[in-house]
Length: 186
Image: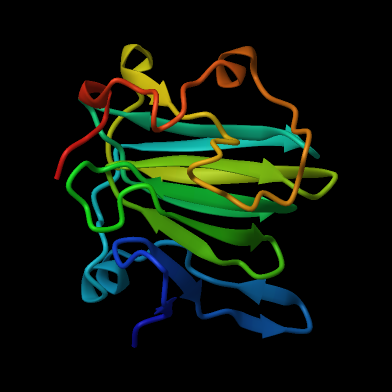
């Protein structure tokens, strides 16, 4: 029996995963990753790195990606709530420049798979949040790129106006201004 199913996404390659939750008066249990279930749904099963981030309300991390060492990411929230965004930046893609945004929380327990070739970011909406993600490739700091979170051309409807950003995220380029050699191709 498969213990997960997927919701339709605006971009077919992005998968919103809904785990089957076993709940009773003691609490709940669910599998956030099961190789057989993921294989049955055509999802990746080879991950090389697990990450966890703690962030305070209003923190926005992203929109980040790697070019030479692209990462697929399986993301979820263990505590709190975030608005999670993936932007298709693959040159030649029919959905180039489009994004998918979804609320992930410890209440809805949704999981999102973001394939290689997408920029990724999220903003914390709760007092704080613990964000976990599995990556299909290790992090390479020399290969990290990004796009400005508030790029007018992307038109992302962030549920926040004045986020807390890292210094490097404040100076990221827009999709229009970035050197096209710094974007993945299909």
